[in-house]
Image 1 (cartoon, rainbow, N blue to C red):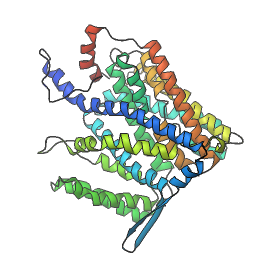
Image 2 (cartoon, rainbow, N blue to C red):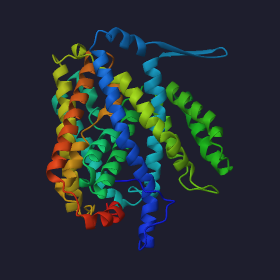
Image 3 (cartoon, rainbow, N blue to C red):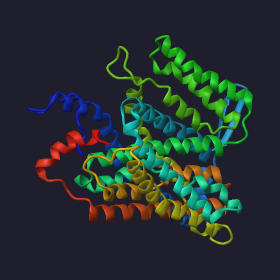
Image 4 (cartoon, helix red, strand yellow):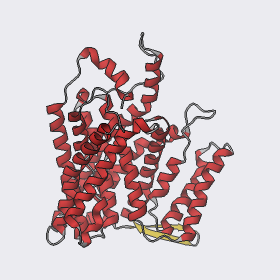
Length: 424
Protein backbone atom coordinates (compact mmCIF):
# COMPACT_ATOMS: atom_id res chain seq x y z
CA UNK A 1 0.00 0.00 0.00
CA UNK A 2 1.49 3.37 -0.96
CA UNK A 3 1.62 6.03 1.77
CA UNK A 4 -0.89 8.84 1.32
CA UNK A 5 0.24 12.44 1.42
CA UNK A 6 -2.45 14.25 3.45
CA UNK A 7 -1.48 17.60 1.91
CA UNK A 8 -2.12 16.50 -1.68
CA UNK A 9 -5.51 17.22 -3.23
CA UNK A 10 -7.88 14.24 -3.33
CA UNK A 11 -8.91 12.72 -6.65
CA UNK A 12 -11.98 14.15 -8.31
CA UNK A 13 -15.13 12.50 -7.06
CA UNK A 14 -13.78 11.47 -3.66
CA UNK A 15 -16.42 12.08 -0.99
CA UNK A 16 -15.71 14.26 2.10
CA UNK A 17 -16.04 11.20 4.35
CA UNK A 18 -13.43 9.38 2.32
CA UNK A 19 -11.12 12.44 2.45
CA UNK A 20 -11.41 12.47 6.26
CA UNK A 21 -10.68 8.73 6.35
CA UNK A 22 -7.53 9.25 4.30
CA UNK A 23 -6.35 12.06 6.58
CA UNK A 24 -6.85 9.84 9.63
CA UNK A 25 -5.10 6.92 7.98
CA UNK A 26 -2.05 8.88 6.80
CA UNK A 27 -0.10 8.46 10.11
CA UNK A 28 -0.95 4.74 10.13
CA UNK A 29 0.27 4.29 6.56
CA UNK A 30 3.51 6.14 7.33
CA UNK A 31 3.97 3.90 10.36
CA UNK A 32 3.39 0.73 8.34
CA UNK A 33 5.79 1.88 5.60
CA UNK A 34 8.61 2.46 8.10
CA UNK A 35 7.97 -0.83 9.92
CA UNK A 36 7.92 -2.82 6.68
CA UNK A 37 11.27 -1.50 5.46
CA UNK A 38 12.93 -1.53 8.90
CA UNK A 39 12.23 -5.26 9.15
CA UNK A 40 14.98 -5.80 6.57
CA UNK A 41 17.49 -3.85 8.67
CA UNK A 42 16.39 -5.74 11.79
CA UNK A 43 16.82 -9.07 10.01
CA UNK A 44 20.29 -8.07 8.82
CA UNK A 45 21.32 -7.07 12.37
CA UNK A 46 20.04 -10.35 13.79
CA UNK A 47 21.88 -12.34 11.11
CA UNK A 48 25.14 -10.46 11.76
CA UNK A 49 24.82 -11.09 15.51
CA UNK A 50 24.11 -14.79 14.99
CA UNK A 51 27.02 -15.29 12.59
CA UNK A 52 29.36 -13.22 14.77
CA UNK A 53 28.49 -15.20 17.92
CA UNK A 54 29.22 -18.48 16.14
CA UNK A 55 32.50 -17.41 14.59
CA UNK A 56 36.05 -17.35 15.94
CA UNK A 57 35.30 -13.75 16.95
CA UNK A 58 32.85 -14.79 19.70
CA UNK A 59 35.17 -13.46 22.41
CA UNK A 60 35.20 -10.07 20.69
CA UNK A 61 31.39 -10.07 20.52
CA UNK A 62 31.07 -10.78 24.25
CA UNK A 63 33.81 -8.32 25.15
CA UNK A 64 32.14 -5.54 23.15
CA UNK A 65 28.78 -5.79 24.89
CA UNK A 66 30.39 -6.34 28.30
CA UNK A 67 32.46 -3.14 27.94
CA UNK A 68 31.81 -0.84 30.92
CA UNK A 69 30.33 2.56 30.06
CA UNK A 70 30.69 4.96 33.01
CA UNK A 71 28.54 8.02 33.64
CA UNK A 72 30.26 10.64 35.80
CA UNK A 73 28.41 13.76 36.92
CA UNK A 74 30.33 15.70 39.54
CA UNK A 75 30.68 13.37 42.51
CA UNK A 76 28.14 10.92 41.10
CA UNK A 77 29.48 7.87 39.26
CA UNK A 78 27.39 5.21 37.57
CA UNK A 79 28.84 2.45 35.40
CA UNK A 80 27.07 -0.33 33.49
CA UNK A 81 28.10 -2.44 30.53
CA UNK A 82 27.19 -1.57 26.95
CA UNK A 83 24.47 -4.23 26.73
CA UNK A 84 22.76 -2.73 29.80
CA UNK A 85 22.79 0.74 28.24
CA UNK A 86 21.18 -0.73 25.13
CA UNK A 87 18.54 -2.82 26.94
CA UNK A 88 17.67 -0.37 29.72
CA UNK A 89 18.62 2.93 28.10
CA UNK A 90 18.09 2.89 24.34
CA UNK A 91 15.11 0.56 24.63
CA UNK A 92 13.38 3.18 26.80
CA UNK A 93 13.09 5.26 23.62
CA UNK A 94 11.56 2.24 21.86
CA UNK A 95 9.01 1.88 24.67
CA UNK A 96 8.34 5.63 24.62
CA UNK A 97 7.36 5.35 20.94
CA UNK A 98 5.20 2.33 21.80
CA UNK A 99 3.45 4.52 24.40
CA UNK A 100 2.90 7.23 21.77
CA UNK A 101 1.36 4.69 19.39
CA UNK A 102 -0.94 3.29 22.08
CA UNK A 103 -2.06 6.81 23.05
CA UNK A 104 -2.80 7.71 19.42
CA UNK A 105 -4.77 4.51 18.87
CA UNK A 106 -6.78 5.15 22.04
CA UNK A 107 -7.63 8.65 20.86
CA UNK A 108 -8.53 8.27 17.19
CA UNK A 109 -7.57 4.78 16.08
CA UNK A 110 -8.88 1.27 16.36
CA UNK A 111 -8.78 1.43 20.17
CA UNK A 112 -10.86 4.60 20.45
CA UNK A 113 -14.22 2.79 20.54
CA UNK A 114 -15.01 -0.43 22.35
CA UNK A 115 -16.87 -1.90 19.37
CA UNK A 116 -13.95 -1.25 17.01
CA UNK A 117 -11.37 -2.40 19.55
CA UNK A 118 -13.21 -5.58 20.51
CA UNK A 119 -11.84 -7.80 17.73
CA UNK A 120 -8.13 -6.84 17.97
CA UNK A 121 -8.47 -6.89 21.77
CA UNK A 122 -9.87 -10.43 21.69
CA UNK A 123 -7.24 -11.50 19.13
CA UNK A 124 -4.41 -10.02 21.22
CA UNK A 125 -5.67 -11.59 24.46
CA UNK A 126 -5.93 -14.98 22.80
CA UNK A 127 -2.47 -14.50 21.32
CA UNK A 128 -1.03 -13.75 24.76
CA UNK A 129 -2.87 -16.28 26.93
CA UNK A 130 -2.52 -19.33 24.67
CA UNK A 131 1.31 -19.13 24.32
CA UNK A 132 1.67 -18.57 28.08
CA UNK A 133 -0.50 -21.62 28.81
CA UNK A 134 1.35 -23.74 26.26
CA UNK A 135 4.71 -22.72 27.75
CA UNK A 136 3.41 -23.53 31.24
CA UNK A 137 2.21 -26.95 30.06
CA UNK A 138 5.82 -27.81 29.22
CA UNK A 139 7.42 -26.14 32.25
CA UNK A 140 4.96 -26.36 35.17
CA UNK A 141 6.65 -27.41 38.39
CA UNK A 142 10.14 -26.63 37.10
CA UNK A 143 12.36 -23.56 37.71
CA UNK A 144 12.08 -22.79 33.99
CA UNK A 145 8.38 -21.94 34.47
CA UNK A 146 9.48 -18.35 35.13
CA UNK A 147 9.77 -17.84 31.35
CA UNK A 148 6.01 -18.03 30.66
CA UNK A 149 5.95 -14.42 29.41
CA UNK A 150 8.61 -14.86 26.72
CA UNK A 151 6.29 -16.14 23.97
CA UNK A 152 3.53 -13.59 24.49
CA UNK A 153 4.46 -10.60 22.31
CA UNK A 154 4.54 -9.91 18.56
CA UNK A 155 7.34 -8.08 16.75
CA UNK A 156 5.59 -5.36 14.72
CA UNK A 157 8.48 -4.66 12.34
CA UNK A 158 8.98 -8.26 11.23
CA UNK A 159 5.23 -8.99 11.14
CA UNK A 160 4.44 -5.95 9.00
CA UNK A 161 7.46 -6.77 6.83
CA UNK A 162 6.10 -10.24 6.05
CA UNK A 163 2.70 -8.79 5.13
CA UNK A 164 4.46 -6.22 2.93
CA UNK A 165 6.05 -9.06 0.97
CA UNK A 166 2.53 -10.27 0.14
CA UNK A 167 1.72 -6.91 -1.47
CA UNK A 168 -1.89 -6.17 -2.40
CA UNK A 169 -2.98 -9.67 -1.43
CA UNK A 170 -3.32 -8.23 2.08
CA UNK A 171 -6.50 -6.19 2.49
CA UNK A 172 -6.11 -2.84 4.29
CA UNK A 173 -8.45 -4.07 7.03
CA UNK A 174 -6.13 -7.01 7.64
CA UNK A 175 -3.11 -4.71 8.03
CA UNK A 176 -4.98 -2.56 10.54
CA UNK A 177 -6.06 -5.67 12.45
CA UNK A 178 -2.43 -6.78 12.74
CA UNK A 179 -1.28 -3.30 13.79
CA UNK A 180 -4.01 -2.99 16.44
CA UNK A 181 -3.35 -6.52 17.70
CA UNK A 182 0.38 -5.79 17.96
CA UNK A 183 -0.21 -2.51 19.83
CA UNK A 184 -2.43 -4.27 22.41
CA UNK A 185 0.11 -7.10 22.48
CA UNK A 186 2.85 -4.60 23.38
CA UNK A 187 0.66 -3.12 26.11
CA UNK A 188 0.11 -6.60 27.53
CA UNK A 189 3.85 -7.30 27.47
CA UNK A 190 4.50 -3.99 29.23
CA UNK A 191 2.09 -4.92 32.02
CA UNK A 192 3.70 -8.35 32.34
CA UNK A 193 7.15 -6.72 32.62
CA UNK A 194 5.89 -4.21 35.21
CA UNK A 195 4.12 -6.73 37.45
CA UNK A 196 6.05 -9.96 37.00
CA UNK A 197 9.56 -9.18 35.74
CA UNK A 198 10.54 -6.21 37.86
CA UNK A 199 12.49 -6.46 41.13
CA UNK A 200 11.08 -5.68 44.54
CA UNK A 201 9.87 -2.07 44.67
CA UNK A 202 11.65 0.59 46.75
CA UNK A 203 9.10 3.23 47.71
CA UNK A 204 11.19 6.44 47.91
CA UNK A 205 12.60 6.41 44.33
CA UNK A 206 9.20 5.26 43.05
CA UNK A 207 7.64 8.39 44.57
CA UNK A 208 10.33 10.52 42.91
CA UNK A 209 9.56 8.89 39.55
CA UNK A 210 5.82 9.42 40.06
CA UNK A 211 6.33 13.10 40.91
CA UNK A 212 8.43 13.58 37.77
CA UNK A 213 5.68 11.97 35.68
CA UNK A 214 3.07 14.17 37.38
CA UNK A 215 5.09 17.21 36.33
CA UNK A 216 4.47 16.40 32.65
CA UNK A 217 0.72 17.21 32.60
CA UNK A 218 1.44 20.20 34.86
CA UNK A 219 3.80 21.70 32.28
CA UNK A 220 1.22 20.94 29.61
CA UNK A 221 -1.42 22.88 31.55
CA UNK A 222 0.98 25.79 31.85
CA UNK A 223 1.24 25.83 28.07
CA UNK A 224 4.87 24.71 27.82
CA UNK A 225 5.36 23.38 24.29
CA UNK A 226 9.15 23.17 24.04
CA UNK A 227 9.90 19.45 24.12
CA UNK A 228 13.33 20.05 25.64
CA UNK A 229 11.63 21.36 28.81
CA UNK A 230 10.26 17.86 29.45
CA UNK A 231 13.63 16.11 29.14
CA UNK A 232 14.75 16.63 32.79
CA UNK A 233 11.43 15.18 34.00
CA UNK A 234 11.86 12.21 31.67
CA UNK A 235 15.40 11.52 32.98
CA UNK A 236 14.26 11.75 36.61
CA UNK A 237 11.28 9.45 35.91
CA UNK A 238 13.61 6.93 34.24
CA UNK A 239 16.22 7.04 37.01
CA UNK A 240 13.57 6.83 39.73
CA UNK A 241 11.94 3.82 38.10
CA UNK A 242 15.30 2.06 37.82
CA UNK A 243 16.24 2.81 41.43
CA UNK A 244 12.82 1.63 42.63
CA UNK A 245 13.23 -1.82 41.05
CA UNK A 246 10.67 -1.29 38.30
CA UNK A 247 12.18 -1.77 34.87
CA UNK A 248 13.06 1.76 33.65
CA UNK A 249 11.52 1.21 30.21
CA UNK A 250 8.11 1.41 31.93
CA UNK A 251 8.80 5.13 32.50
CA UNK A 252 9.20 5.49 28.73
CA UNK A 253 5.79 3.94 28.11
CA UNK A 254 4.09 6.18 30.69
CA UNK A 255 5.69 9.29 29.22
CA UNK A 256 4.38 8.27 25.79
CA UNK A 257 0.89 7.79 27.19
CA UNK A 258 1.03 11.28 28.75
CA UNK A 259 1.95 12.98 25.47
CA UNK A 260 -0.98 15.02 24.05
CA UNK A 261 -2.65 13.82 20.87
CA UNK A 262 -4.64 17.02 20.31
CA UNK A 263 -2.88 19.91 18.59
CA UNK A 264 -3.26 23.24 20.38
CA UNK A 265 -2.04 26.16 18.34
CA UNK A 266 0.26 23.97 16.25
CA UNK A 267 0.06 22.21 12.88
CA UNK A 268 0.18 18.81 14.56
CA UNK A 269 0.10 17.43 18.08
CA UNK A 270 3.14 16.73 20.22
CA UNK A 271 2.33 13.03 19.89
CA UNK A 272 2.56 13.08 16.10
CA UNK A 273 5.60 15.38 16.10
CA UNK A 274 7.49 13.00 18.38
CA UNK A 275 6.41 9.94 16.42
CA UNK A 276 7.61 11.51 13.17
CA UNK A 277 10.89 12.55 14.81
CA UNK A 278 11.64 9.29 16.63
CA UNK A 279 10.04 6.48 14.67
CA UNK A 280 12.77 6.28 12.05
CA UNK A 281 15.54 6.44 14.67
CA UNK A 282 13.90 3.64 16.65
CA UNK A 283 13.11 1.48 13.61
CA UNK A 284 16.48 1.86 11.88
CA UNK A 285 18.69 2.48 14.91
CA UNK A 286 17.48 1.37 18.33
CA UNK A 287 15.89 -1.93 17.29
CA UNK A 288 18.78 -3.11 15.07
CA UNK A 289 21.29 -2.22 17.83
CA UNK A 290 19.17 -4.18 20.30
CA UNK A 291 19.12 -7.13 17.89
CA UNK A 292 22.88 -6.91 17.41
CA UNK A 293 23.37 -6.94 21.20
CA UNK A 294 20.93 -9.74 22.00
CA UNK A 295 20.45 -12.02 18.99
CA UNK A 296 24.00 -13.32 19.10
CA UNK A 297 23.22 -16.82 20.32
CA UNK A 298 26.27 -19.05 20.50
CA UNK A 299 24.66 -22.33 19.47
CA UNK A 300 27.09 -24.27 21.61
CA UNK A 301 26.00 -22.26 24.68
CA UNK A 302 22.35 -23.33 24.39
CA UNK A 303 21.47 -26.40 26.46
CA UNK A 304 18.65 -28.72 25.42
CA UNK A 305 19.25 -31.09 28.30
CA UNK A 306 17.47 -30.97 31.66
CA UNK A 307 15.01 -28.08 31.72
CA UNK A 308 16.55 -26.66 28.56
CA UNK A 309 14.35 -28.70 26.24
CA UNK A 310 11.29 -27.53 28.20
CA UNK A 311 12.27 -23.91 27.69
CA UNK A 312 12.92 -24.47 23.99
CA UNK A 313 9.67 -26.37 23.43
CA UNK A 314 7.60 -23.90 25.47
CA UNK A 315 8.90 -20.84 23.63
CA UNK A 316 9.01 -22.45 20.17
CA UNK A 317 5.54 -23.98 20.23
CA UNK A 318 4.13 -21.07 22.21
CA UNK A 319 5.01 -18.69 19.38
CA UNK A 320 4.48 -21.01 16.42
CA UNK A 321 1.28 -22.76 17.56
CA UNK A 322 -0.03 -20.90 20.60
CA UNK A 323 -0.13 -17.52 18.87
CA UNK A 324 -2.24 -18.46 15.81
CA UNK A 325 -4.53 -20.78 17.80
CA UNK A 326 -5.14 -18.15 20.47
CA UNK A 327 -5.67 -15.31 17.97
CA UNK A 328 -8.11 -17.29 15.84
CA UNK A 329 -10.00 -18.99 18.67
CA UNK A 330 -10.73 -15.90 20.76
CA UNK A 331 -11.47 -13.80 17.66
CA UNK A 332 -14.12 -16.27 16.49
CA UNK A 333 -15.59 -16.55 19.98
CA UNK A 334 -15.86 -12.77 20.31
CA UNK A 335 -17.66 -12.47 16.95
CA UNK A 336 -19.91 -15.47 17.64
CA UNK A 337 -20.84 -13.98 21.02
CA UNK A 338 -21.75 -10.64 19.42
CA UNK A 339 -19.01 -8.77 21.30
CA UNK A 340 -16.96 -7.97 18.20
CA UNK A 341 -17.60 -7.46 14.51
CA UNK A 342 -15.66 -9.32 11.83
CA UNK A 343 -13.71 -7.03 9.48
CA UNK A 344 -15.57 -6.24 6.29
CA UNK A 345 -14.45 -8.30 3.31
CA UNK A 346 -12.05 -10.40 5.41
CA UNK A 347 -12.76 -14.05 6.26
CA UNK A 348 -11.37 -16.29 8.95
CA UNK A 349 -8.87 -17.79 6.54
CA UNK A 350 -7.34 -14.34 6.13
CA UNK A 351 -7.41 -13.75 9.89
CA UNK A 352 -5.50 -17.01 10.33
CA UNK A 353 -2.62 -15.46 8.33
CA UNK A 354 -2.50 -12.64 10.90
CA UNK A 355 -2.46 -15.26 13.66
CA UNK A 356 0.53 -17.03 12.12
CA UNK A 357 2.49 -13.85 11.44
CA UNK A 358 1.82 -12.77 15.06
CA UNK A 359 4.05 -15.70 16.04
CA UNK A 360 7.09 -13.59 15.08
CA UNK A 361 8.05 -12.53 18.58
CA UNK A 362 11.61 -11.35 18.00
CA UNK A 363 12.26 -7.96 19.72
CA UNK A 364 9.87 -8.07 22.67
CA UNK A 365 10.39 -11.80 23.22
CA UNK A 366 14.17 -11.33 23.43
CA UNK A 367 13.61 -8.41 25.80
CA UNK A 368 11.39 -10.45 28.15
CA UNK A 369 13.82 -13.39 27.98
CA UNK A 370 16.59 -11.10 29.28
CA UNK A 371 14.39 -10.33 32.29
CA UNK A 372 13.11 -13.86 32.88
CA UNK A 373 16.41 -15.76 32.81
CA UNK A 374 19.85 -14.95 34.21
CA UNK A 375 22.80 -14.97 31.83
CA UNK A 376 23.69 -18.54 31.00
CA UNK A 377 22.56 -21.62 29.06
CA UNK A 378 18.85 -21.18 29.86
CA UNK A 379 18.81 -17.67 28.41
CA UNK A 380 20.71 -18.79 25.31
CA UNK A 381 18.25 -21.65 24.84
CA UNK A 382 15.29 -19.26 25.10
CA UNK A 383 16.93 -16.95 22.53
CA UNK A 384 17.52 -19.87 20.17
CA UNK A 385 13.86 -20.89 20.46
CA UNK A 386 12.74 -17.31 19.76
CA UNK A 387 14.89 -17.07 16.63
CA UNK A 388 13.80 -20.50 15.37
CA UNK A 389 10.10 -19.91 16.03
CA UNK A 390 10.15 -16.41 14.53
CA UNK A 391 11.87 -17.67 11.37
CA UNK A 392 9.39 -20.54 11.03
CA UNK A 393 6.39 -18.27 11.71
CA UNK A 394 7.54 -15.72 9.13
CA UNK A 395 8.15 -18.39 6.49
CA UNK A 396 4.85 -20.13 7.21
CA UNK A 397 2.89 -16.86 7.17
CA UNK A 398 4.36 -15.88 3.82
CA UNK A 399 3.64 -19.30 2.31
CA UNK A 400 0.12 -19.40 3.74
CA UNK A 401 -0.54 -15.87 2.53
CA UNK A 402 0.57 -16.74 -1.00
CA UNK A 403 -1.72 -19.76 -0.88
CA UNK A 404 -4.94 -18.34 0.57
CA UNK A 405 -4.89 -14.57 -0.03
CA UNK A 406 -6.19 -13.32 -3.35
CA UNK A 407 -5.32 -10.09 -5.13
CA UNK A 408 -8.30 -7.71 -5.46
CA UNK A 409 -9.79 -7.01 -8.85
CA UNK A 410 -8.37 -3.82 -10.38
CA UNK A 411 -11.71 -2.05 -10.20
CA UNK A 412 -12.14 -2.88 -6.54
CA UNK A 413 -8.61 -1.93 -5.43
CA UNK A 414 -9.17 1.83 -5.08
CA UNK A 415 -12.42 1.25 -3.19
CA UNK A 416 -10.72 -1.16 -0.79
CA UNK A 417 -7.82 1.18 -0.11
CA UNK A 418 -10.18 4.08 0.57
CA UNK A 419 -12.64 2.27 2.81
CA UNK A 420 -11.22 -1.04 4.00
CA UNK A 421 -9.10 0.26 6.85
CA UNK A 422 -12.04 1.91 8.59
CA UNK A 423 -14.11 -1.24 8.87
CA UNK A 424 -12.22 -3.32 11.44
